[in-house]
Image 1: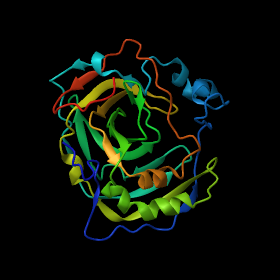
Image 2: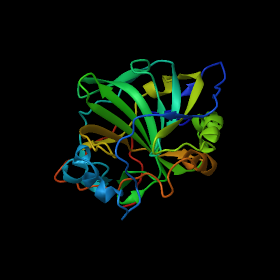
Image 3: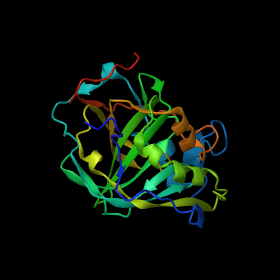
Image 4: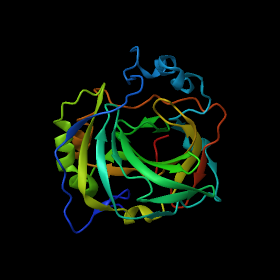
Length: 280
């Protein structure tokens, strides 16, 4: 199971992690969207903003969802999410919608889900969480995004509550501070901070323990479907200070899409370890 010292842990190599000055980079931007309910670009209007976003309004397998623990289907045959990761450099990116840690494709490693290999591409955060469990929303959710050779996506989601500090976010303090102070025009630019140290992904190779599995979509436009989701059943901890720093560069109100209808989908449960107690 994932290590409590940062299961998503990305420990830093002997050379210290250094962050370059944050920079604003011009880049191609899609049609603007936001998270404020009731606004012209809010989640309920995403599907109307562009033909490319049509699934946001018309899709039948959309994410996120509310996971109701008494309705999940125990499925012992699900894989243990074995992963093989290597050392890698990364770039911290704020595109105005979320904050991501991106890796050069093919440099980190992969996971195997349903017999298909998916390469680790990036990780990013949503605050508050996009998924809920028995109606409960959490302060933070981490997504580890993987892509297969045919373009398929598999995402591992980690939920967080406020508690003790996570070592990885201590290591990111300088980079996050620089990013929060940046004044990019997010309609046209991205804020980027180079992580010059080498991330050791060894902690991510451990078994994820119990998790919920369902087929859904991206949680932001274009809301692409057929994404394989694995939501870990164990909630991690992050300090209030770390949470505040991580969310300082996000839009006011956060970046969480409301939960979407199941539309008959089944949520499976791999009980590799004892499930934690979620409120019912």
